Picture (spheres, rainbow, N blue to C red):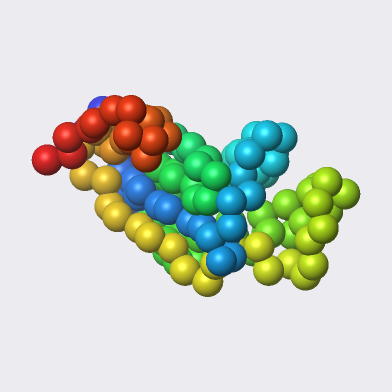
Length: 141
């Protein structure tokens, strides 16, 4: 209970492993856009009071480990992050490539609670690229 946080009447430790994908699973996260989307998501998390513990952008999806206060639902938080980041990404990247509309993210997400195996999940997020390239193996069992 050392790492638990507090609100006025709650002690909490709510962490989630989240995966979000761009529309049509296009491979859009490379080069400058890969680092820009990370900065945008970090800023939005800070603005919302959500802690971005770990994150990694693959060419066609993003893994994040988020600590979301219990006063916010996961769906509301991800709706905020995806909606606001789509607008910011569109504004920043429209000069670099042709983008139409503000529909950047696919209309869903994958979420899993992070229990006592937080370090294992964080390592999985960090090493995701090697896993997909077949260069490494990580046992999550």
